[in-house]
Structures are given as structure tokens and as C-alpha cells.
Length: 421
Length: 179
Image: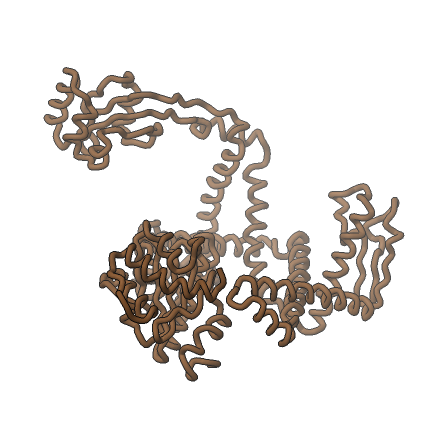
């Protein structure tokens, strides 16, 4: 089933109008299933709450909120489709992904361990009491003093912890091996359960020659700290599988898109070819300072045109007779209008109209118009290099939209919105 | 200015500045706290005109906020829960929205605000905040007023649970403290 944006927004209003954003339903409300993946109302809320629109969303009217929810839901569906397809293609078993996932696992374990260490840092009661006395009534001052104290304590505890873990692992460093002739297999650090080789800290493809040895040592120490802490956290039974799963869910669609982008936009020639078929991308539209008068009947417009031709001002008449309230208030001065933004009928006339002259009567759904061009700022054409990034973006958008349609055929998408209206 | 002096000045300033800003008559005599409760008057999102005196005898947490302010929104979510938990013990949170009415109403609806929200004409924002001791006009900004109508504490930035426990619970009495 396909849904357009308006229908989706209407369904979103019906679904969410009942309660505030954070009210949790008793049962998870399944909005869409993509293959065997379910998207619930709670999930949509949490995505919204962590999106850049989170603050703005709260201030929006119900219709705008529904439209945004609809857009977000479609993005979620697209992300699920890409994830399923990435798994289908085996990207989750690729070397790139496995390496990324392992790095992420170590980083999560490290962060978890260090967060716990930081949490354990406390301010002794008498020190805290003295701080409260010193910063009485100054909440910001007290908060900064507390933070500064804890940061200092944490720094000390962290150093002591790393030292103790090094001792436990009986770490041996071989810094002297960081020299010409080093290979990715050269062992730089070893402990009871940890080994770090040159290839683990320096990407040989990126640095075929030995970079500054001091920099290599720095990378080695960082890696050693990460591995030591991650190993200890694993031994202590820290479980990061939930967060790792979320990483996997976000990384797989991104990886697939990165792969497809290379396929869709492989070289500059392809971009040039696309650009030559879409010259509008390079166009800088003309800007025109317009005067305008709108009335309800052709007869009235013709009569006013006659008066203007006899010397009366379009602007004075617009201030008196225009049915466009905004235009009447501004005495028909429309300001600088960008080419292509108005009704097609008006665009056509304005393009040919001599500056300072009044147009023939033009009919649009809004009424019968008389327009005059006061001044123009000419448009132009940008060269390929100036719009190269835009061309790339548009090509990707074009391909992505077709690709998602293809994926919808391959992985079944079921919208569960209508039943709940 | 020290916090103590700020609070003392606030009581007098508020009565004077608010009477100018909202054309409410400044009382000729009476306790300073009474002045604030009686003089502070403005329209609520419910359409009715409110005075702080309506909530006399309760512990008022007067919270100044704006719809575009993310920390204000986070704090409002906490306030909704606190009002729910301590309303019966005499807590009355009162929001003062410094923003356009439609946006304030959208926030009230979306966050399920369960306490009154009063509105201040935008032109008076700076004067109003300055009158409440907030010369920089920053939000969120919260003033705690005890059961007699006397401001007892000013908080700049979002109020966390610890501050609420330290500054508001004691005013609620035994039931609230340490809960």
C-alpha cells in the first residue's frame, strides 16, 4: 500500500491527537511493518525527540506535527528497507563492517567503564558543605565548583586505574620497533591477553611510509588504553549488546548508501552528462521589482488599465481597489520577486513586459491582475564546477527514490494506519 | 548584588514594575509579599485574567519560559510530574510564557501541562524579567514564593531535582521533604 504525504499526515493526526507527546500507550502501537521489522509509535516519538526538530516540534500546531511525524515515519521506513537490503547483500558480514563494529564495541565498553569511574567520584560531605557555604544562593557558581572538583578527582582516579590495569596485564611496550622497516605485523605491545601490532594503530594504505614516530606512539598509547579498559569491562560482564545493536541498525543503511552512491555517481563524466540534461540546475533566476493590482472582474481590471494608461498611478489605484489585502496595504508594491515563483500566466507576461509599462489584464485563480516591472536584476548561468555538489546531490536523490521503490517490492511494507482512524 | 539583597529588592521592584507594565494598582500598604500576590495580574492561556493571589497559601513556583527554549521544555516535562506528585501537598507551579500565544498553547498541549500558564505581552518581556531580578533576560528563570507570598529563592537555568528538593520541599512541609 502506498501513502501520499497528505494522507499520511491525516492518519498521523488521527493517531496522535489524543495524547501528549510523552504519553505512553499500554501496548506498543505498530504503525508500519517492513519485512519482519516493526515500527511503533513509541519509536517514532523517540526518533522525533532526538531529531533536530525536537524543540520546534513541541511548538507546532497539530497539523504541522502530523506532517512532520508522517515525514519522519517515511524516513524510518526507508531506513528499515535499507537495513534489510544491506543484510540481504551480506554487508553485515563484510570486513569493513566487522572492523567498524569491533571498534564501536571497544569504544562503548571504554565509555561505559569510564562513565562508571566518573560516577564513583564523590565530593566528601565536609568539602561539599564548605562549597555550599561559599556559593550560597549562587547555583551556577556551586555547579562549576562541584564540576571542577570532580574533574580533578576523576583525572587522578583514571590515571591510577590505567596504571593498575597495565600492571595486571603485565604490559610490555616495544617502542624501539617503531622504525624504518616496520611492518603491519610488528608487535608493539603485549600483555597477558592483549597484543597490539603496528597495523592495528596505523592504516598502512593511508600511510605507506612510516609517519612521525611520536605520533605513532601516541596512537599506540590511545589504542592500549582503549583495549585495556574494554578487556576489563568485558571481564566484569559489562553488556553493550543493546547499544551495539542500535549502532548496527544505524550503520548498515549508511554503509549501503555509501556503496550505492559510488555506483550511482561514479565519475565526473557521469555528472557532466546529467548536468547537460538538466540545465535548469545552473540557472540563476532573474529578480524583478513588481507592482501589482488585483481585482475581481475583467471589466474592472480593464477600466483601471484605461485609467493607468491615461496617467493615473497603478500604485495609488492598487491602494484603493486591490482585492489582495497585503497588496492593498503596500500600495501594490510586491518587492523583489524571483523568476518562476508566481502563477505561470503572470510569469509569461512579466518575462516579456517592458519596464515601466502596465501589462494587459492577466487572469489567475486569484483574480484579474495588472502588473508593472519597476526594475530587474538579471539572472545568469553558473558553470558546472559551481553546481557540481548540487548535481551530485540531485543525482543521488533521483537514484535513491527509485531504489527505495525497488526495495519496497522486495521487502514487504505494511502500513497499519487506516484501521486506527 | 547579593542574593539576599536581590530578593528584598525584588519584592519592591516587582510590585512597582508590574503595576507599570500591567496597569495594576500598587497597594498603598500591607506586607511586601501580599503586594506581589495582589498586584501581579495577567491573562492565562485559558483566557481568564489571573492574579497570583488566587494561589495564596500554596507554595508557588513561578517559572518563566519561552517556546523556543529547549532547556525550558525539558524542565516543563519535570514540572508536570512534580505538579502531579505534590499538587495535593500545596505545590502550585505557575508558568509565565514569554512568547506568542499560539506557540505557548501548542507547547501546553504537546507536553500535557497540568498547571496554569500566564502570558506576558512580548514587548514587556525584558522589563518584566528585570523586575524579577533577571537583568539579562535569560530563560528558564524560576522564582519560588512561600505560602505567605514572599519570594524565597531565585533560580537561573533549568531547575534540577536536587535544587527542587533543597528549595521547594521544605516550604511544602514535612510531607514533601525527603519524599
